Length: 548
Image (cartoon, rainbow, N blue to C red):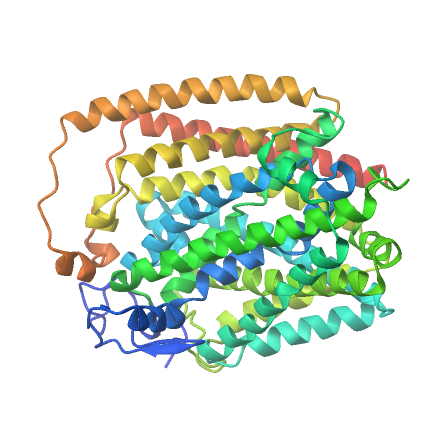
């Protein structure tokens, strides 16, 4: 047997199946239970529903807790140290954005059985497919490097040199992934997910001010007023909500776990639960650091996560400092695992390789090989003396800002493609919400990119201008969509059972979507924005490297 999957025209594949790896079909073997592929019994009691949820839970929680990675922990800690409790309100914005964006890829994964990179290639053309895959490979590699930076800083707190802590973390990541057993990998991830609950004793030990915290959640504002720095930090907080890798990861992980439309409601619950968990964790870190730094000379002077742990040690207690360092290490491991796996999934999608955690190393050498190489190289970069780690972190943030809008736009387009999702396409209200989110993320990503390249720009003025433009475009788009939908033919009625069993046909059997002039213009504008932004970012990176 060769590792490459058979061509779609191969007679061994069912002509109506879009699934690329045959091990993406079968029983669901979750960390806390099993669901047989033949099990179609309705869940009528709460006990049966809870047991089913326990078997399904995993992809949503892992991707959300992975979102609170080393960069996320650092960002929330910086918000608490520099602005106290005043930015807690931004976290409430994360919940609907997380749920809406990730719910779309959950549906795409369960209904199509095909990864995000493959769908983009097949529905929008090879050039867009390669562009999205190439961008996610580069972005994810840089992100993995920042995860190992977090491992390095956490290790330093406990007196471990980077050349000890980083290789140990890299070996741990590879070891828990190449076992060839999906359930074993997921259980290992849940060990780290449970460890993230250390945020609860951290916030208790820090004794945050209840009144100040409540005001921070309910009253939007910024300590010291809105400035360029505070605006950029708000952008960073919201910008970490839906990173491009999250959408690639969860869609492929849902497929790898063998979740079908019949179990979609349970996976949506998993995703919603994860959204609340990630926000609670972020709020706890922000409140703990606000309590530790408020009223001290170091308030407003963020350095890095290691410094935060050291100040927690001194100002709160040694236990608080140790817990924060452990949280940083834990977040780095979960983030690195999810981001690297998202890359390997995309690699398998693009090149038609077997890419399932159900397979052993011998059956999926390139899948696991790409994972191992990325981990090893990213870890090695952190160990290079005088490596431009700060430059890498800046590039990661800017690159994520550039890639995020296009990733979400394609999700919205795919979720309105009836050949892809059939009865599972977006409802009008969801399109409206998704449109607002896409518009907001385009504005935020543009602010992030422009302010990275032109640090002296007035961020407040830029926000007002871009916000007004986005609002006008959304109104025009909404009016056009409403007018178009009035003359559309309603889909034929479908029973609940038919809907639960509907899957996307083989990609070779689908007709390419019709491109209207408006869609061509929108995607041309988006591609132009991406090219210009990437060029500007490259120029800025070279300038920073020269002046180091």
